[in-house]
Length: 101
Image 1 (cartoon, rainbow, N blue to C red):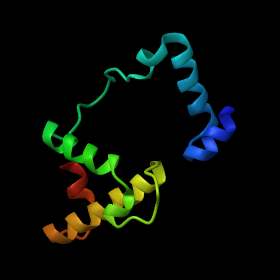
Image 2 (image 1 turned 90 degrees about the horizontal axis):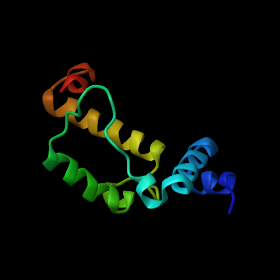
Image 3 (image 1 turned 180 degrees about the vertical axis):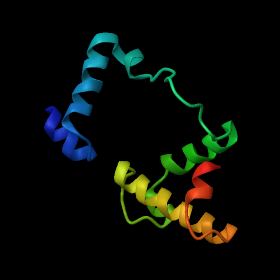
Image 4 (image 1 turned 30 degrees about the horizontal axis):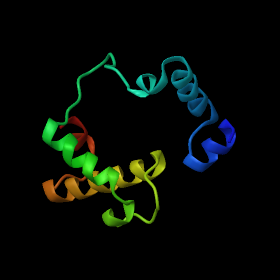
């Protein structure tokens, strides 16, 4: 299977697939492990990351998302719904306060 077919199957960009193939060809499975990235530290605790991993390893349908697989678009839509629910819970009209948490 070529990179364009894999990209269509995964809903990703061809260049992204090519990048991961290059890393695998260069370093094997070890090349697929992402290292530390520069920038601002994450805001989620280890516990929150573990909870998120459980959710993302399951079907999106279990989160009332009408998709078979998680991809960037599906995750972005679901994240937007979570922000809206948090805003409603906190009594906020906008997402600015939630984004800073």
